[in-house]
Length: 48
Image 1: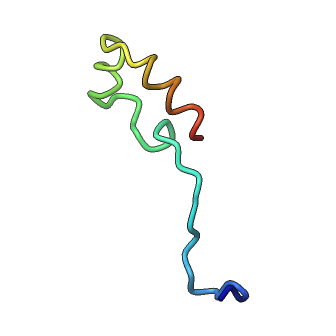
Image 2 (image 1 turned 45 degrees about the vertical axis):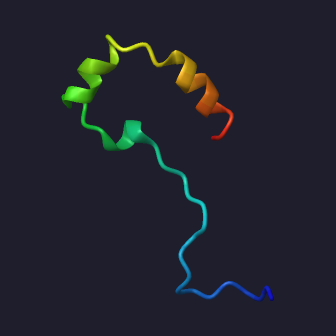
């Protein structure tokens, strides 16, 4: 049964951006330049 959302309930969905959480000098940003993930990115874009 669905009722009003209680204040203590966490959100089921939330917005999260890796760009906001991965520091600019992190090793993953260097690796990203050499690894081709465009196929995965385009696949995942439909889910955002």
